[in-house]
Length: 236
Image (cartoon, rainbow, N blue to C red; front, side):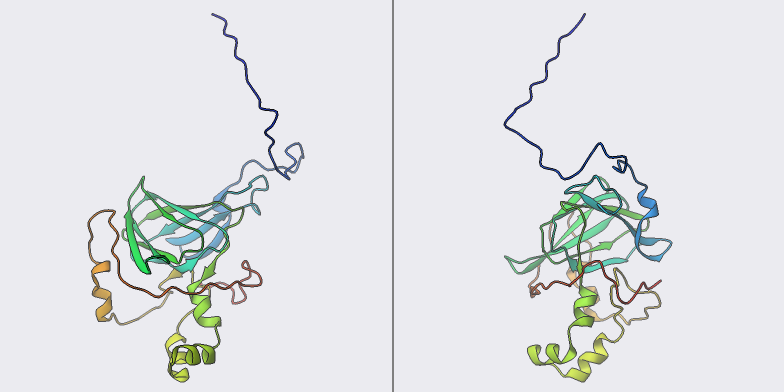
């Protein structure tokens, strides 16, 4: 049987794009395995896909994240995009600071589950199993980021001491082990002694997919001149 199929196109709708899809340089496929953003070791690393890697992307980008148990995507926020974290393998807890309630909310996810981080919200991810594989999807052509390690290391010690009524020399000693642009922690060679806070209820086993909350201060965001510049190099 022959079927007549008609396609209706609304003439009042236009697609706004600066991409020339007829150009020989237009790219429609890319091997994300060849685009490493950061590598701690062979089991903990991040690959990136954005418009710099695939020039026909518009408001989409992603991070391909691999973690072993107890490794952490350090606290950070994305000033230009929301983030949807999808678990492919293993398990992780996605923690975010809700700026409206001033509370940390922790969401454990397993394969097939997601956690959503609104744009500009302070957050981090902790692998709770080995061989954890996450995809972080962004609604921006490049996932810009401001890292907690850089906030701590690059904010002048005298400003921190004066603002928060701290001993400046003690503050310098406290942050001395922090590696700028840590990305995945703990850094290699960390021999930190666990404190009582490591046994907090939020680190212990929780009811599935229910947030664990406690008060936490909300950091005021600032912007790097160039969010893609890593002046301290890589640390692996």
